[in-house]
Image (tube, rainbow, N blue to C red; front, side):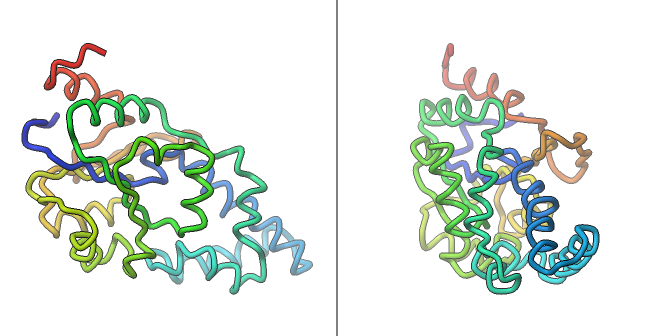
Length: 226
């Protein structure tokens, strides 16, 4: 799929790419509406309707991803509510094998996520994936979400990478388009971000169901027999 000799850095999304998006979908679509309904004394259907409107209003902004924003807006301890269902946090199949193969191939492995720092800390604590990454970059620390063109310029201040020799993997098409505008040469979309939902069809970018599709080529390129 890729000429790995042309790639030095691999930028990786977290939710939906390295981790199963089922946790986040369940949290925002099921768990938060239940707690919000109880707090407001309304039905779960009404709570869900109110919340979905608010979600849509700020989707794609840093506030949408911000735990503190939603705690203030909803009067709920969002960080604590996430811990109530943290048993649903799961690493996608073949992710650890892929990260290990990248390390053996000498590739720089950088997590770039829009997730809020509190969400990021919870997920790294549960999965220990930070031990298999060279850098972890949170968009909230840079002040722009990945959808925003400025994010990529600010990322250069934190990580040394050449867009022409970089692979970026994400499940979000708007984010992939943003990376393309920045000139990142190699782009890959994930077709099954939530393992409880149907596989998507993506035409704009090279795409895979999971990392099993790229492992053989990566290993073969560097004589890795594992």
